[in-house]
Length: 137
Image (cartoon, rainbow, N blue to C red; front, side):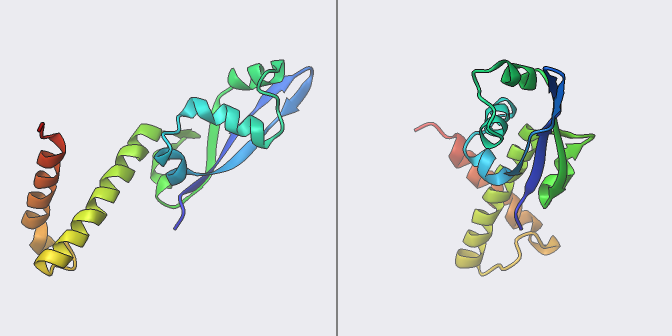
């Protein structure tokens, strides 16, 4: 399932109200080190707003609104705001677990690392992963 959300900015410029938006696939955005600030230019580009214009400056001064989320990202959207850093950490931990599950299946013959009976093995593999990640050689 894709983790998508609509990101919208409401602003006024020269007496007109604008509501440009984009549908964002959040996993891809996070993988490419996207930041909330980068969303303004992405919204501008997809809505044909010149990034060197006063309209763009007005847009940048307005708050991003996140809505219509689908997938796991739903849990990270509260009152129109997205906790992008928490989602980035969630995605990172999910990807680590996928790799650890592959190792547990291939090496130990364990098909469900998250099962209650395998809690200790999951903890051991996670600690080994973190120790390797943090080692200085």
